[in-house]
Image 1 (tube, rainbow, N blue to C red):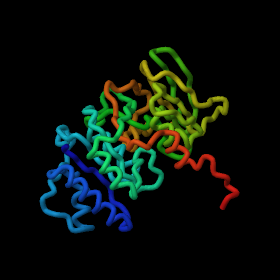
Image 2 (image 1 turned 120 degrees about the vertical axis):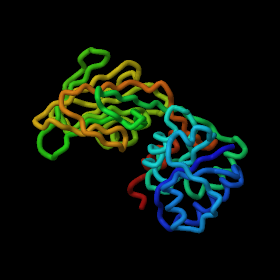
Image 3 (image 1 turned 90 degrees about the vertical axis):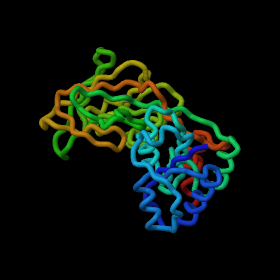
Length: 292
């Protein structure tokens, strides 16, 4: 099995655990590759043997069988920009906080590596959104795993976003912004804006205004197929267009076309992991707040 590793800076508290996961990776693949910047971080933090190779471009991971992302959910979102349309599975190891996507706890490293070596894992295919705006360059990966959002750039005037689906008018939202969320993104930005929690396998999208001027504009759930057209206008002529954590400047009046990507993001899970247990653990469902 050929393994690539992507990661972000982590607390010194995790040094021993990360050393252990690197050791276990080497026991499965004697020539794994590390993302260039993460490799430099590890070299500064701990004694890293010189036989670790590195990569710094997405095409260099096209031949791997597994990408391990060490960090938080943001690190897994970055991993999506590396595996792109290859459907190479990603295993997220959580050294961050919440961890819906990076769902392997740091104390489960040996369990996770045993499962990878033995093939005792299962794979979950997640919907991505593909974005197109005439004349805009999204850096070779015009896709989002969590959400596509249009937001105002300042703290004053609202943005008005007109939404059409397959050229049929849906609504005009006056708000601080508008989120189009995948099921994966339903537990991210959309949730904080009052959106519903959606099971990852559902083929639906959620259109969710952020701080809407009209309180009757509630989150709208629609089938994922088809194409959404979003057009932003306002007192300001420029807005923020975000694809997950990647930000771009969007000129007012330009049509943003959003449709399901023709490929999926593949998340590797351990045998005992499933969506409801993850939500219960992360959202503290079933816990009486009086029990302190």
